[in-house]
Length: 301
Image 1 (cartoon, rainbow, N blue to C red):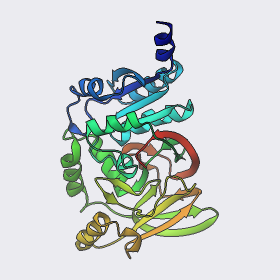
Image 2 (image 1 turned 90 degrees about the vertical axis):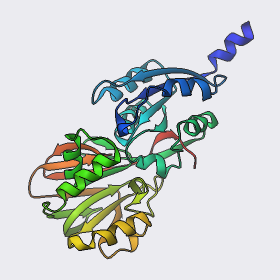
Image 3 (image 1 turned 135 degrees about the vertical axis):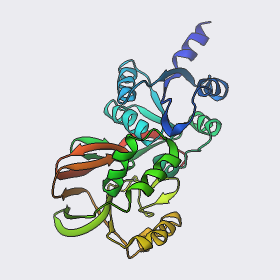
């Protein structure tokens, strides 16, 4: 009995924070699947479901203070963002079970899209430390965006149709009326002026759904990729989409990629931005910095 008590104390405490609405997918069966496939010789498992925007962050902080070793985000990039911010702050370990619309960070880190395999990856317990970033004081882990993709994130937040279908519907509805802007950009002290349809700040290579904006990005090089999609006629959209799906955007004449550690972007007025797909209203000046090797995360790399 004494041996068993010591053995149990050596198990890692793990909390699964489940977003019930992310990606338009039902999550009611996930606790049962975790119970079936999680290695109980390694982990003491607990579950919590989020009830509102920001709740995942609150649950993660509470778990970190209660000495949970691993906190798993069960949702999309927005859920991961909330959980990861607290995991990083308290130097815990992040796990991911991808259940979002795009799952950009999970795909980049080769985390399986299937629930069973994602749980088995947690059992393998391979921990990597990755770069993160901060924009005007708020963290992001996969992608931040200014311009059309930020506009879409704001519009999508008010759409009742979740998942990829709702996101594509919003793009089709908004793209013909959106007006590109002129931006003043400073990257590690070098100044640029660019007319842009989108400016994406990439930590990983893709938005999600294997749609690549910066195919050569790394989450461990201490750099962010400033990806500028230039203004272009709408008839060239199929070409750009093809390049994104084939991971060729770094070779595109419509996309310019500049790497750096400290980035300042100035636009004409305050407007929307997005952090890992979640929309925020921000001032006209945006300051972004990389946080090298700041987050411990279970990956398949």
